[in-house]
Length: 189
Image 1 (cartoon, rainbow, N blue to C red):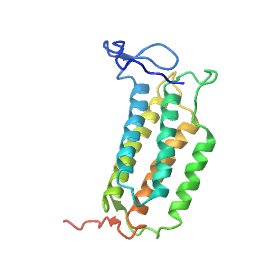
Image 2: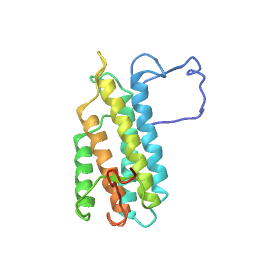
Image 3: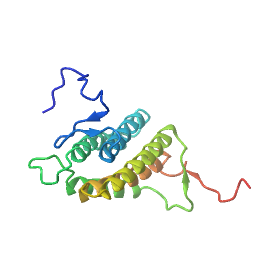
Image 4: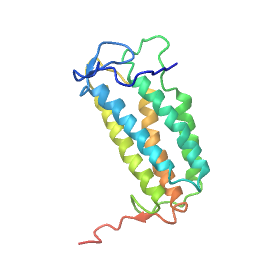
């Protein structure tokens, strides 16, 4: 259970932060960058949800995802994979994303070109969330490549599926793909 009575602690004034387990690390550490990018993804999803008044199905999915992203942050903030009782992303969370992607995608027509970020305000916001999520995935991949660091396979799968879900949700928010703005290769030459 989290209990925060005081917001500032002054412990980070030296440019370090504490993880769930392990020593303090610089705020520029790859692990901190990774869970910071997850936090940014969560914030952009919160903004996207403000534009989804007419899409309760997508809003409910995103509400669950925002909670999952706190789980993912806790997962990343616990570097030792052997930490007993650590909160980790579970395969069932990845599987739920896959089911939700399939459900949303079933209503969409096949793509004939790449989709430009835009269309409705909700779709544009979801595309922004998708790009921030991709940045988080790159940060997690970079972290996993650092000697002595690890990132769990379910966590990596989750963030990869999440960017796919955000893409499909953006198309769904664009009148089920009818309002997608398609790339016209070389059109501005």
